[in-house]
Image 1 (cartoon, rainbow, N blue to C red):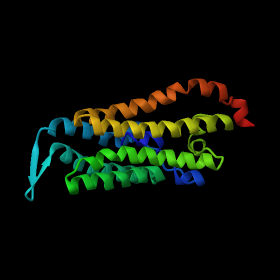
Image 2 (cartoon, rainbow, N blue to C red; image 1 turned 135 degrees about the vertical axis):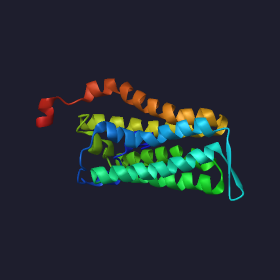
Image 3 (cartoon, rainbow, N blue to C red; image 1 turned 45 degrees about the horizontal axis):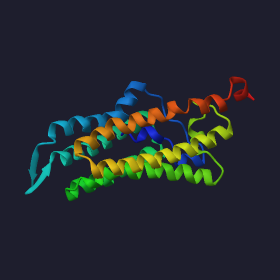
Image 4 (tube, rainbow, N blue to C red; image 1 turned 120 degrees about the vertical axis):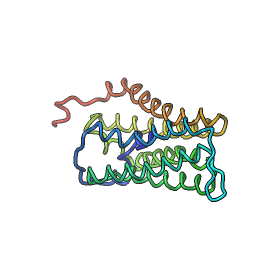
Length: 221
């Protein structure tokens, strides 16, 4: 999927209860389906940014053309992922809906601003979901990640609070970049900056994981 899907592709409604797990597929194929569209958008924009296409009397710039292709590719790859795995997480569905809505508005109205707002809306949504769980005294992050990153309850609450704030910071950063910088800068930021920031965030939590990590014996209790 897009870069935003790294942040919480399995957060959301499934945090309220368990859902059946989908079929396993080759991890490289899964990565290609998830990250392929955003990389394709980056390449397409690089090649089309200085071109213009006239359709039905309306002149469309390269950014809008690349956006139209990205939306179509997202629908296709998400459909393939659903076909192969037998399921989509609520946040994968939410991400696709926001891509279609904001990307579609950009193409329909010939206004790239809607598509640039899309990462902001997704990160605000992620932060809201995690924040709602925290208000209820629960870590929705733990419900979807505890198998790969075992932590104490206190550790999960701390990590969830940090991640919710981090999502809000990413939303603000996206707004600043697209409103003050060039299209080229925003596309690079969306493609690489947001993704690297997410990896950097989890690497920075190494101290928390050591302090609140569970041993194998603790997990078995």
